[in-house]
Image (tube, rainbow, N blue to C red; front, side, top):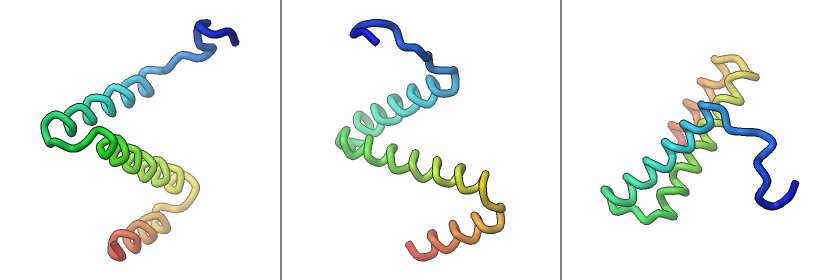
Length: 77
């Protein structure tokens, strides 16, 4: 792929919406709540990782197992 050439794959609507929401939430946390930009991005990245792991686990394991693991993790914190 040459520099400056268009991407072979474009974002679908859901991916674009997620990116827009992350940018808006980061801007709001930074501007309105006074959270430094790096911390806001780290917070959103961690939330995204947790959400992704939860979805991945819930599609591969039974709901009861995921609920038990999440309950144990939340009560330990």
